[in-house]
Length: 169
Image (cartoon, rainbow, N blue to C red; front, side, top):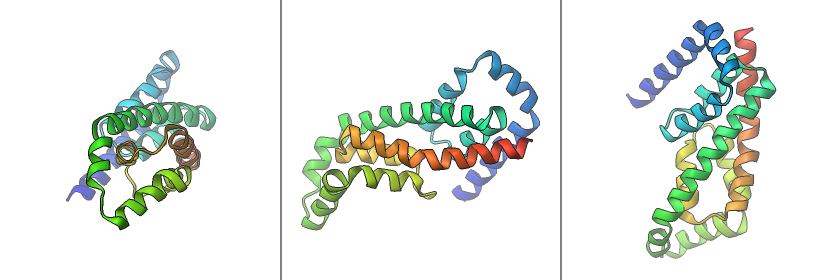
């Protein structure tokens, strides 16, 4: 039931973006800083990332759309990572004691943190805020986390913002 609700909500939001594109574009030209803030709030509200990406393409040129969504994405990613690290890192360190889980945690956090985050960001089935929270909980170092987030979000931002732009053309 939840995936159906998510699919319907996503389709309705994108359809609203198409129907009200003129009004939204005019308003966004007057208030361009609103869109990264909207993306930030959407990520914290667990709105599927594809919604903001397609809407950005409907409202802006692809380059501007990518820049605005990445700005909001990065801000939200850092905020949720910090919350996960501050709130749950100690608990995770004390709860993950089984050898196989310790090895997985070590791989994710020490051996390949940048690649781990980038791959999780690219996968269409991994939820944006969940990846952020778990990355903070596991103690993935901030520089690797930030770089992995940027590298993983960039391809999907380019693709979906461009798709939104072409959809609205």
